[in-house]
Image 1 (cartoon, helix red, strand yellow):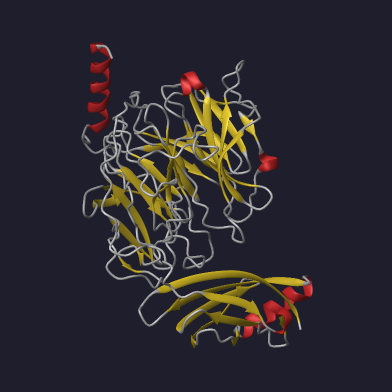
Image 2 (image 1 turned 135 degrees about the vertical axis):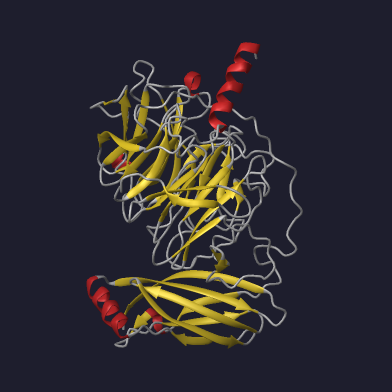
Length: 511
């Protein structure tokens, strides 16, 4: 690297890290109107283009401030948009100028499988992409349409980072977030080029020998890397009590961290029955319901043209659209306050372009740029060159059950028939004497929780009862469909304190 280049990068980093100046009054300036936009991003060092991701599966480009009519990419026939699904984000690698590659994160047809796909810029038109892509990474997300995560981003290490939700439903019913052999409810880190995992390469310093980098997340819909410091900030959407913001300074970047869900929710106990004493990473900020309902994580502002916000993390509640800002410090964030911006309904993402200018994305259809008077100067993003630290020691107890844990087999009684009281009957058989907690749902109706002892090798029949309203809903569903899916989750604990989890999907019918 030449001395001139080094000096320019150093000056850029100083500008990125510069403290805020005198208070100002930032405003939002419309960029364009789109069809349910979900995310914006720009290629590194491309100061002309802003790419807008639409939920339906279309990516559009705004070039020199003008939205172009022809999309960059249209894969709408391949995208599932049920519930919270859709085309959710995109990312450009550091070498985009030469490679022409970019990546998208979506829930694919027909059943909502989570995918990262690689596409290539057209050789003849930089505002278009070749329509044939390559699936880099895929993960089944059966049964539920929510908690898909939603963001991919290239970190300061040059790797592609992916945040996945816990698989949907409520209270981590599928027991994914704490199981490091599963990729749901996790922060993943991969090299997207083909290698030892087929469509991608697992970096040698990943802690579990897989794509998994950190565990214990519920629905980290939006996360970002501070373009100035390389720090990682995650906005994790809460269940029914707390929303949380997680912050990890570079160069650690949360390797083998456990953010606690469902053992914790924000700074309080969560709904999961978990092993006491686990070293959970506490959030630097949490927000209580009902004042907050769905956190939209944001970015650390590094645009020197926004003196009242520079160096501060901005975020919002999706539903009330009020943007707030705080200063990220450990162990707790400080100086939380309004960002002084107009309300933006259904604020689904914050984004940055190659210059560090900040954007607000509403899936009502608008994309707005934040500026203070004239648009701020362009500060290109340097590469901090962060490397990962040594692996931490293993936790005192495993995050997942070992072979000494009790195992329970689940079956159906009465040939899966549901009688007039809409009460499915199941059979449970354990390999050792234990106590079990059984939760279940059918036709989106939660059945009453059952706690009971099981004797080793003896089959036990349980009735799973709905409430009165649930009886009507189940019978209505049975009249519409010949069969319904009953999802049963069982947690077993033996006398030694070992726990085991199992879940089955069973088909039931009218009795």
